[in-house]
Figure 1 (cartoon, rainbow, N blue to C red):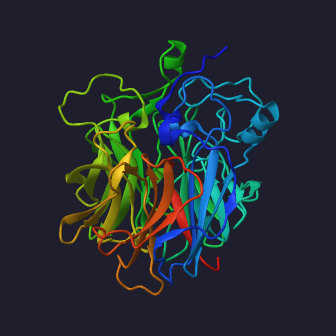
Figure 2 (cartoon, helix red, strand yellow; figure 1 turned 90 degrees about the vertical axis):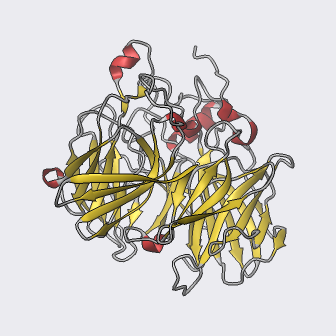
Length: 469
């Protein structure tokens, strides 16, 4: 029998909520902008039963939280993503699968098209070709009905899907194409890369050679290239056999970045070696002349994911991630890099109309220095990459948030003309709210605060879907 372990991700505002509800006419402090109309939808882990074994934040069942805003009013709805694994455990009345920190349970009934782990669909959401998909990088997407958030079922592009689906697909705002990848931990090809048309048809899937399976959580695109991060957070069966963690960061293994023409394959990917690091999330990438520029939150190891490091790192730098810039010269084959900011931060984002193009502004969630686990945030940072400065929006005493979603003002011209939306938890009041921040001056107080009818646990990634979808 597997013992139940105590986890910090089952405590405080990481702990799950049980109620699924729909509540209209939410209280609003301030005034919602009249042209802010649409739906904020955020995904996150919310285990329906007491977990088995060692529980990590990324293991819980997916739960979607939706705040619908129209004509200055707001409504709230939350629903579980009812995956195959969720339904099997619901029927059994208990947890059946352990999480990613435990060995795969090969004797459990199949629930995931692309691996032995439970597909929780708990990490992110994407809106493309008229469909909302809930995503978890180890399996297939799940289609979600709007606005009710009911789970329609697994989505495999009419059987075209041949790999797991990243939690961070990238949509080209000009062509409407969506790029995604899927990685394998146990057998080659360890990476498959796909391009989806604006109409929602998979145009190509190609294998990319990697020496071993790695946890590749995010990637990036430019106008002409797709960028992969082959970083040494590895999965090795032999460690399991020695009763060691299967996932481990290996600082003595290589770190490299692959740059591939958008419609290319393994024969024309170019790899650039970089100093050992781990990048959970990228902010953006773009081209300037003969260079490809990549922005992301870089750390010395994968400590932020609660994953052990194989050996102690020989440096005194704090292991928290911070915003970083790499420049890859495609003609000379050289890499230059620099730290953009010393603030520890993660969950980078931008105006999605600038994905793959040179962006002036970017936003991250500032990590609280006195809180654990590491993914606890006490503010938002806005970066102006042209003028080289940043602004800080502080959530306030005992208030913690997460990723901000940028919502452009309708018919806006300026890149930062819009709002930042993020969920806030007040640990003193034990209550949650959605705040709306003026993206052109984040130092201001929120223009509006939507008070929510229940506590919303910390989660991962969200999107904005404009009204009239």
